[in-house]
Image (spheres, helix red, strand yellow):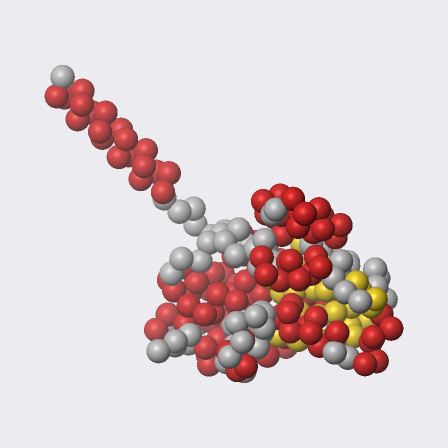
Length: 243
């Protein structure tokens, strides 16, 4: 009987280990589709995206300053994919995310597009303003609502239907509800099961769910490379010093 119990325990242990074992990263898409739990995982993702560009950097060399250099060099070489309808606009939001990092902020950016043209850009500005609400999307909508030349494109809270907000990563609960209040069309670069709210609209209270479903944020049609960059720029906070 004891031997059967031991065998059963061994089977349970083996099953648990096999289920918890992480699959190796094999594609650029894996970078933004899998969780970032440690600096080590982040470094693996960075290596997958940047390849030879990371040759001279060990994990101990990774900090915000070096990440800014690496991201800047990589973005300089990026060419917009004309076959992907949202690529140029996601690129703009990722460029803003880089500007956020340069300003010492969390790496998220956003862009407002009308008739295929970018009319406003912004990035996270929480830390510099000591304001917990100033995510990239919130900052951008604030700029839009305070811009006298753009007042003609909104009526009270509602923004013209042909204006689209692009964010580098999936909006958080706060930003999603602000977007819903404005009845603003929106798209995002990198999806996120950990932080994003767009895929969880069904869990909102009924009235908020009905409002949000008028313009459900959708994942942009853009390259996996840009989405991976967006993901890595945001998760660079793993290397930020909050002391």
